[in-house]
Each structure stands twice: as structure tokens, then as C-alpha cells.
Length: 314
Image (tube, rainbow, N blue to C red; front, side, top):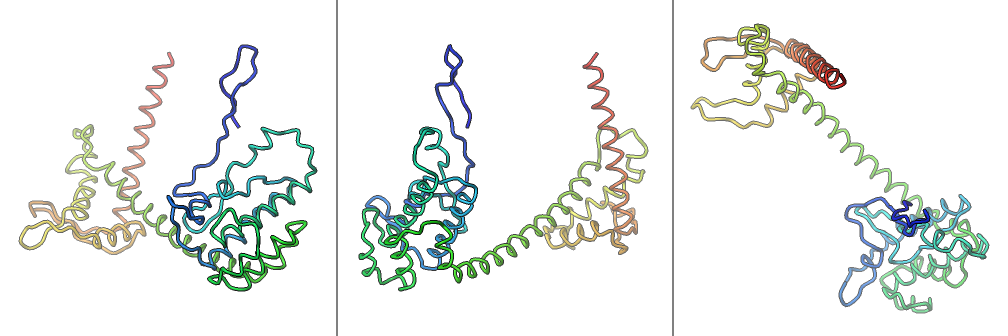
């Protein structure tokens, strides 16, 4: 909570509540409660059980901390891609009405009552439904789900722990789905780590190749060790076929950079553009040369930055 716009006596006249931005999120109302302007598809039962488990878990975390939610309403619950639930606008009522006389147990009970009203309205696709008897008409949901909703609405649980025994099987399903989700995300993360290694190697090669400021430096010239890196750059990006036409081969690029990253002992032939020079080098040698050249370049860059900072500080 950030306060802004101070008055003359030093008291803040405005409060700004700052919350995390969740890309692609919509409210529960927009996602599952149809209207004339917002027709929505029927919520699948498997997803419905998942949302119920997530909401109960959120309420459990809040209540275990000795707090209450006070925002279990369709317009205050966010649904993000991947069937994840987020509670929005938490804490606003506590700031606006800090002197509430209701005991915490009553406020937590109200959370559970609101939870029952929410899932009943969602099952019936109507926020004005408060009678669980209407559930009998919702034949697109199983008797188990309808019985659970009826129980929560007609005899609201005293604490969130009263709900948990009815969700044991569903939590097992959630655990299985979460395991698959974690495995998928870990696989994607491994891909990104792999891509990062490839990008780092290609970037270092780009940094050290043909530096115009070092043209007169023998160690960076066409006859120096860096000449190998220039030929390797051509080997990576400037392939051509027997007719002289350019070849854009992603497989060649990825395979070659992978061997470079691993420091393979495999040797390749690097040729100059006019074909007058041929060099046989291993990926291990090329990798070592790139690292040495890049470290030298970085040292010169840091020294220049330090000299400039010292000069400005005079």
C-alpha cells in the first residue's frame, strides 16, 4: 500500500493498492458466469473440482495465519492461463474498515459462506441463485459434485478443515496434475537453459570478431590467433552449397555450437573465403580461444570504464 498526495498538514489523502500483474488473467465472473454481453462456455467438471481445491487451499492458508479473506466473490477472483486461481483486492476492506467489531471466527465463517455461494452460482451459471434445490436441474454435473455444493451451502462448514475430508480424492488428482505440470515446466526450463548456453557462446564469438578498434593490434589482426575465430564465424553462419548459393541450416548451427559448448575434441577444417588457407582445429581449441579473447576484451572494457569513472570523479 503506497500513500501519495499529501495535504498541507502532512496527512495522506489517497491510498494506492498495488498488486501483481498477471498476464491473461480474467475474473471468475468473466470466465464462468454468462451474461448477454459475455457468453461463456460450460465449466468442465474436472476443472471445477480443481478450482474448488485451489480456493479451499487458499482459504486454509489465510485462515491458518489468523486472517480472513473477505473477497471471495466472482469479481475478485482471477483465473489465469493454466487453470490457476488468484485472489484479488485482498486487504482493501481491512484498510477501509479497520474497526470492525466482528470476531475473526465470524469473518472466516463468512469466507466459507461466500465460497459456497460462489460455487453454487457457478454450477447454476447464475449469480442470483441461492437455493441449492436448483442443483437438481444441473444434470451436466455429477451427483458427487452437486452433493458437495449442496452440503457447503445448506450446512456451511464452521472451519475450512471441515471441508477437507470431502476433497481428499480430488486433492490426489490435483497432486497428479501438478506433478505433470511441474515436469512440463522443468522440461521447458531445461530448454531455456540450453538455449542460454548457445546464445552465450554465439554472443562471445560476436564480441571478439573483427573489432575495428584493434585493427592495428597484431594479436587481433588477420594474421593473429583471432583469425581462427573469423574463419569459425564463417563456418557457422556463411555456409554455401556447391553452386555458391547460401545455405541457412539451423541444424548445422545448433549442432556446431553444442560441440563448441562441450569443448569436443572433434576436429573441423576451416577455410578462408578465397580458399587459400585451410586450418584444422578442434572445438576444444576454438572454445579456449574464444574464452581467452573474451576475457581479454572484458578486462580492457572494465579498465576503460574505471578510468572514465575516475576522471569524472576528479
